[in-house]
Length: 348
Image (tube, rainbow, N blue to C red):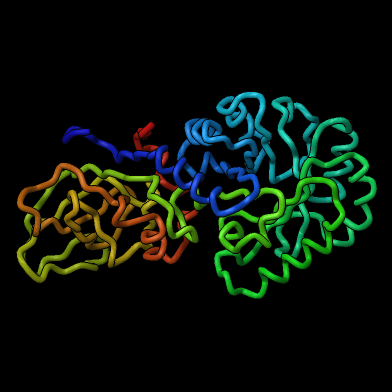
């Protein structure tokens, strides 16, 4: 990159991604898969899936069957690709031509599966208390003999509060899941990133981390995977008492140099992000000032020895979770909303 960069640049470190997967895998005695839904949390499902497959991942998870096609292209014919949304109305099996495996969430989905793909692999998703996806206990009890006769590949559920290790819901769901699944011959799975970190009681036959692979909480030891460099459009002098940005929300208390930078909430830098967030010129922090607008942010670069041509907003010093905390949201939302107009590059 150089001073001619005209749009923000996102760099995805595939070394760090692979390292995070290995670190999470080392925390268990069981198999470790990977969740790559939403275009691998916005980081590019092709390169991300290919990297993880090279590390040995053999179970991938996507939100919708359409997402699974790109994963299959990246990982080849052998790994299993599971679809969280299951066998949706209107599916005739064609979406599953790439040997994708639907996770059945309801009696209606099971009926559709029986009619359209009675001989194809499937998994079962159970509701152990989150009330989001999966068969209710009564439906599972009724359908279990019929489902088990068709040999599901996996029976799984999802934890609602795994990012809070001491939350009583974790043990409650663990008990419910055990009660619902004891005796099944299919592989069992309950843990995503948070569940992986809760310990072996939650690991069952395999874990399926998502956000932790990409450098997000609750995996505190994750290496940062994403850096974002922003181009500076211009730098102006601002005198004491002058204001910057919409609503006059920032007032100069000293003679200042203010950089106008090409990124905003259209790029995933949420308008709600306020004070306490910096950009960086090397290791030197430069604070955001004024309101974030649609395509622009303003940064105080007074303390730099010379005007920068770009500034970095995500790096080892400041993570997606730091941006999320400032915006009153979570790292998932920041990652998945990083702008489509960013140029992208990968550290192989």
